[in-house]
Every structure is written in C-alpha cells, then in structure tokens.
Length: 268
Image (cartoon, rainbow, N blue to C red):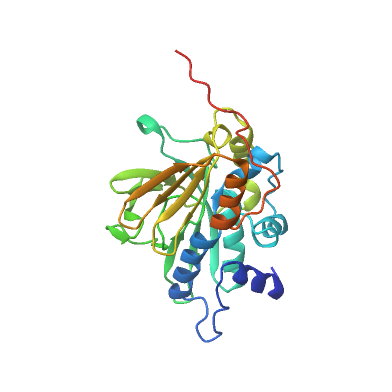
C-alpha cells in the first residue's frame, strides 16, 4: 500500500494520519479500530448482488476505499491489516472457526482475525470483521476479563489454540499459526456460495454508531440499538426507503435493492 492509498483509507475512516512521533502505538490502533467499525459496515451485499469477492489487497482497497463499501471478515480484516502494516504495525493474519450450535465449530478458515504488535511490543487481537464484537482491540496476552463497550471478553487457552469468549459464551476458536490472505480463498468461496452458509441465506449490513450503539439493515428490517441496549425496529416498505437507508445510514450507494440469493426454506 503506497502513501496515497494510506491517506485515502484514513479519509475513509475520517481519521488523521498518525504523527510520526506517535508511530504505531496501541492508542493509534484503538482509535483506528473504533473508527473502522463506525465508518465501514459489516455487510454481505456482494453475495446477493452477484459481485465477485477477490481476496487480493488491491481489490479489497478498491472496494472498501474506492467504492466506499463494506464487506465480511476476509475483506474487512484483510484491508485493515494492510493499512496497519503500512502504518508500521506488525500484523499477522490468523484463522479461526466460529462456535456454532451445540458446540460445533465452523469450517476451517471460517474467520479471519488479526494479531497486531505495536511499537512498544504489546500485542493485540484486532477484529473489525465479525459483526458484533469488541469495539477496541483485545490484549492478546491477557487471560483475564477484558471489559469493552461490546461486552465482557476473555481469551482462553484451548489446547494449542485460543477461544475468544464473549459474555461467558465462546465466540470463535483462534489458531496462532500465521496465515496468508490467499489461505482464506476457500473459506470465502464456501461462505459466498454454499447453501449451508448463513451469509447466503440472509442479508446484513451493520455498523457501530457514534454513541456506541449499533444499526443493522437485514433485508427490509431496520434495527437500531442504543448503547444502553434499548432497541427499535421497523420495516421499510419501498425500494426507495431501502436504498435511502443504505445511502444515508451506511454510506453505500446501490443501483438496486439486493435480494436474498438462497433464502432458507423451512419445512415441517
């Protein structure tokens, strides 16, 4: 990533370039992490719009920065990791498997997260691509409770791996072996094509709000949750309302309303 691309990405996050004296500090990481969650939506619209998902740095930057879109974990953490690396952080891509129902783990390369080392040697788990997760990076070496606006988090030893636990519930199992972006191609393909993938079965567009709450558009259902947990929900009736919500609340310009590619059919 060149200097012009870094500046464009920071403008996308509505963030200033860190002062050279500050460098790749934990405070800089915390600010960029939160701004990413507030400005770049977690969304799976490409799957339902028939858009190709390509896990290459230039293509991710074209989408997230150039087209001012969002994405899911591989795209968001892939792009964010490239930005952090360009700013002087040491970034390692890690694979994870999401905990499902009855303790089942998802597919290999189910999720992409980031291990980030700051200039002072501190290490952090950064994840701007899970949807509802921590607002700030988690201390990678801490095994006690970590309070965050997104909940109470713990990183727990699980054999050679680590479990990320949120409010007492395991969220995903994280491998510590370093990975490359290309390692996640099969996982992205599965999540964007398999009828068993929840990304194929439903639409989602979500981001953290400036007051610490969250807004989500799922198909035509718009949900707004305050930092205090209060929640409002309403149905959007017309295509114009849906496109307006994408534009005004998420900064996404679409030419047509996406429709679910493979809705889940429930049978008796």
